[in-house]
Length: 204
Image (cartoon, rainbow, N blue to C red; front, side, top):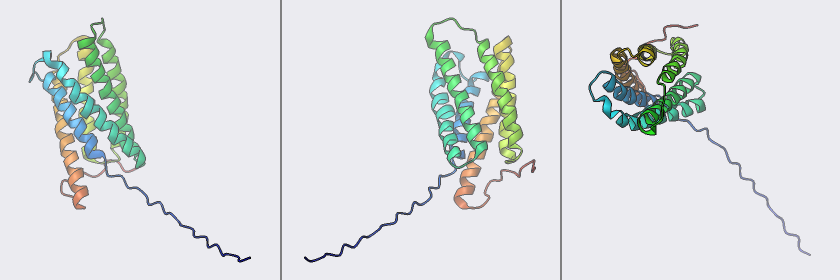
């Protein structure tokens, strides 16, 4: 009998690490678009009767864009970006659903529930603002404007006080978010500082 030599070949497959792009510009643009749309109503720039038209902008930009950004930040082990983006995305989903219920559901509701929900979001925002001291000045500024907007909205929904101040702070949130998104995008693409974000305020 003829013996045949069997040659075994082993193929080694090396898994290359997947590097996710920085999702912060996406999340910030989502926040910027949503807050601009929300501010337009609070500032009286558009009719409050057309609130239903805010839902798509809040749902897709404010909620979904930030959710995508937050999910990628978890992959990148960025606990700050992951927590902030996903929490604010859930807030935007809640706002969109609240708008839908109050406009289309045809059921009785007490808008004060919204006010108490905002109190909870304010607590988180203050925590995030404290954590942002370790990141950069622009993120700290954005969160300060978010804090002020939420503070202004709480008495609006609990006591019927005008929402105009909240509109001002939401507009400031939008402008600062657009700037920060552009800065991160350009700085990452060029590998150098085109637009400054500011050094961390706190270095523990």
